[in-house]
Amino acid sequence: MESQPWSIHGEIIDTCNCEVICPCTVGAPATEGKCLGNVLWSIDQGRYGAVDLTGLAVVIAVYAPGPKFDDGHWRVALYGDERATTEQRGALETIFLGRAGGFFDEWRQLTAEVVGVKWVPIQVERVGRKRTVRIGEVLDIEGEGLTGPQAASGTQLVNPPFWKGAPFPANLGRSSRFRYQDFDLHWEAPGKAFSFSDFRFGVP
Image (cartoon, rainbow, N blue to C red; front, side, top):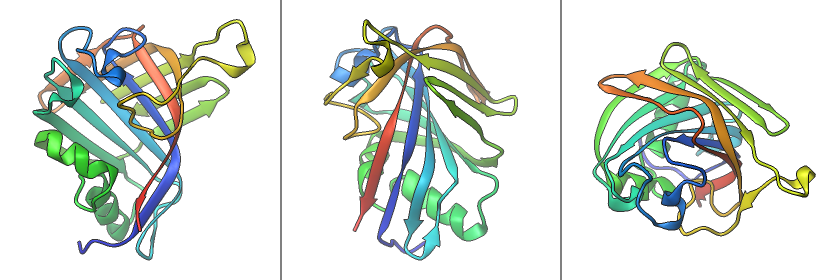
């Protein structure tokens, strides 16, 4: 697909096997020496050229062998919203695999292998500080944002060196469920790092 101007914004939900707070966000080695994560982008408004992407979602599974997340050599799997039309699928794959430039081009450069692309039903629930993401028997995430003395505002990470929803602050939390299994990738790590925030990316 020929590259077009694009823009997407909405909410990102990020879960991995690192301890809270995930050290990868500040450029430190992953808790267990490798970061195993699933990242969802729920597109509240978006376009790729004339193709409307509003209301769709994408999940990327990332096996980052570390020790730091941005050391590269990633193996990734892409899951796109099954409701997408043929044109929308082409646009989403082009954007999220980094072929359209912008933020995801950096991810493309860190990726050694795309193990697969699937179009699946993605269920997302965003209520208060709780978030759930499900893809059939493949992925099950449930998490909730942390709070401190000022419970109404939650706990946030602001301006970290590496954040998948930049430039917005990350609402930090902890997963209560986290399980992923597909292709030859498998991890299960409840009670670990979880976060969500707004995102806005694009190329004019």
